Each structure stands twice: as C-alpha cells, then as structure tokens.
Amino acid sequence: MEKRLKNGKRVRLVTGDITRIAAGAIVNAANSALAGGGGVDGAIHRAGGPGIMAELDEIRAKIGRCPAGRAVATSAGRLPAKYVFHAVGPVYRDGQHGEPELLSGCYRTCLQMADEREVHTISFPAISTGVYGYPLSEAAGIALRTVVEYLETRPTGVDEAIFVLFDAAAYDAYAGVLGEYGSAAGTP
Ligand code: ADP
Image 1 (cartoon, rainbow, N blue to C red):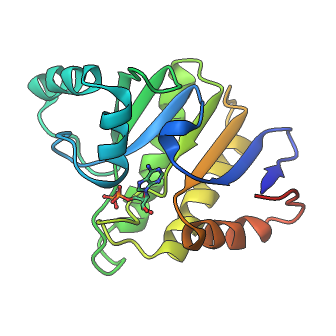
Image 2: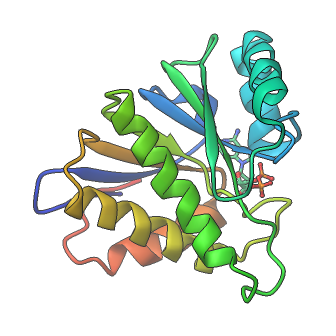
C-alpha cells in the first residue's frame, strides 16, 4: 500500500525483511546497550556485517547507553543503504509510562537524523512490537501519525518513508491505520 501526501511525499507499507529493501537509511530496533540482539537487530548485524558493531562499540565508549526514544547512526556495511539509525524503542508496560511519547520520539529522531544527512528515503521496522511487547495496533497508529505529521509539516528532504512489516499481522495493523488517512492506493 502506498499513500501519497498532499505535498507529494510518500508513505509505503511493504511486507518483508528490512535488510533486503534499499533505502538511504535503514532504521534498526535496537536496545539501550546498542549491543545487538534478536529480531530486527540480529538480522541487521548479520546482513550488514561486523563493521556496524565496531562503530557501535566506539559510540558506546563515548556516550554509554542510548536512552529510549533516541537513536544513533552508523554506516550500513553490506546493507543496501548508506546509514543505519539504531533507534531504541520503549519497553511496553501498560501504555501509561510514557511509552507513546518515547515511541513517537524514535520516529521523529530518525527523520531528523535523515534530514541532517540529506537522506531522501528511510525505512522503518515496527519498533517495539517484538520482544518489547508494544501492541501492534497502538504502535501502528503512533508510528504512522508521527511520520505523516513530520512529512506534512516539516521542511524535510525525506521524500519517502517505507514501513517494512515482517508478517501479515503487522502489515494489516499498519494498513488499517494508513487506510483511514483517505486516498490510500495500491497493493502490498
Ligand atoms: P523490539 O525489541 O523493538 O520489540 P524486535 O526486533 O523484537 O524489536 O521486533 C520489532 C518488529 O520487527 C517485530 O514486529 C518483528 O516481527 C519485526 N521483525 C523482526 N525481524 C525483522 C526483519 N528482518 N525485518 C523487518 N521486521 C522484522
């Protein structure tokens, strides 16, 4: 599914493995320790190669942990991208502990980092919806609202945001929300 915003910017939903889809920047669902893990994180390090972790080692030595809601950038190794933005999503408790703001902060931070680096295409996984336990439909709403609002209201150089959803359940949750924005068109 693709939604074209009034200013010509695009939000696209695809099903698949985020490491296989070319973009200026690929966003990783990282953890605060920036130490690698399962899910998207594992896939990104496996496909991108050891150079990404070597850069994270240097960043970690400088800043320590990366707090939830923020992100750090590395190059992308063998991935089909120029950068990886390692975003730290919130661990979901009950939605009453600042989780929505932190999740929204991940997307906004990554879009700002894209702008700082003149990246025009950015791909996102469904941050926090794996081991961090964020309910898919809530996470989809926050992710899409944040990204659409940024693309519609900021003077951004990002032309396209791609959400790469790993399975049909995630795709359907995002498509349900994006469909409500009106003139969504196209097929998965
Ligand atoms: P978090 O710790 O932020 O919850 P996870 O990596 O556990 O991060 O999961 C985030 C989402 O990414 C989940 O919906 C999961 O199904 C999905 N996912 C896992 N591997 C990939 C992949 N290779 N590409 C895209 N999405 C993936």
